[in-house]
Image (cartoon, rainbow, N blue to C red; front, side, top):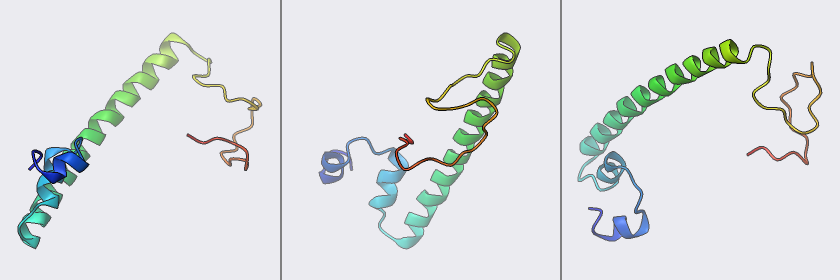
Length: 89
């Protein structure tokens, strides 16, 4: 599949997405979608487990130190609302 037009236009597609896009029936498409959801759920679980371990290590090695200090942030201000001039990502 990736040797044809799909690979040309979307060379970085993961295998399940490629198979789902090119599925020959709705049933096959649903099957690939379900497999991808299962794979992604496992990946997210692993990522979150690692993030929790990282957070614990950070607190142990650098207690009280902020990991990121955003420009214009004042200590004690927990507002998560961005201003119209803030760059989010």
